[in-house]
Amino acid sequence: MGAMDGIRNIVILTGAGISAESGLRTFRAEDGLWEDHRVEDVATPQAFRRDPQLVQRFYDARRAGVRAARPNPAHAALARLDRAWPPGERGELLIVTQNIDDLHERAGAARVLHMHGEALSAWCTACDARHGWTDTLLDSPPCPACSARSLRPDIVWFGEMPYGMDRIFAALARADMFVSIGTSGAVYPAAGFVQQAKSHGARTLELNLERSQGSAWFDESRLGPASELVPEWVAEMIGG
Ligand code: APR
Image 1 (tube, rainbow, N blue to C red):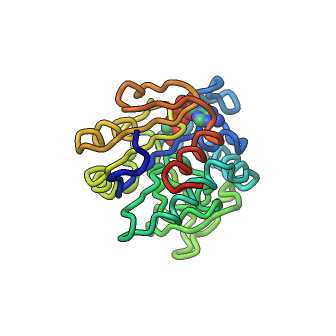
Image 2: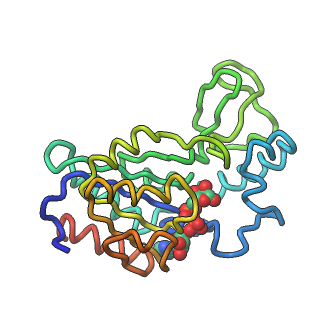
């Protein structure tokens, strides 16, 4: 595939696989359990209503894990691409991540959209304010804005609407290239983005450790670790 010809607007979708080499567990590799709970049973509004402390403990553990992790060469390569692809000159670029870690940002990427929320953010269900949050939520701390003890993890749980969907669909409609990195294609709406992009004529590339559920939709699938595949692809796009 001619690396650069005619490509201006790029949408990149990342999943847990891009952070695996930073030591953050993916969801469907091992047994997907946490303290003998299935993630699907903890990351839900029902679980939060039923046992808020269990859910807060789960996200306290996620928050600590994210803070202990470091960006890997795949995050660094996407940050290089972000910097080398200035809006207007080269075109648009958007990193849509399903991940709740901040490794894209810590690697230096700016145009990042967390469609499933962020581990290091707390959401006040009383006043709707969101606050950067690195500590525990277990002791129901007061909201810095309204003092209500109504802070929850700022995470999109199963059954809730992902963030930024209008912006994502607008970007997919304009995309010349759609690249999916480290995702199993198991969860919608993210798993359907490749079809959206393709229907608007975008080239589609998958970079993943193994074939995903959506591999058949991609023009090209490269299999291997993100820390190798992503720097290689970015070098094709911007040279060096
Ligand atoms: N390099 C590249 N890909 C990798 C690597 C790696 N080092 N390690 C694992 N992978 C791939 C796996 O082969 C798998 O296809 O990353 C993918 C991870 O898939 P999942 O564990 O299903 O994670 P993800 O696709 O991000 O899950 C989507 O599901 O549980 C919900 O909200 C949660 O955002 C998550 C969503």
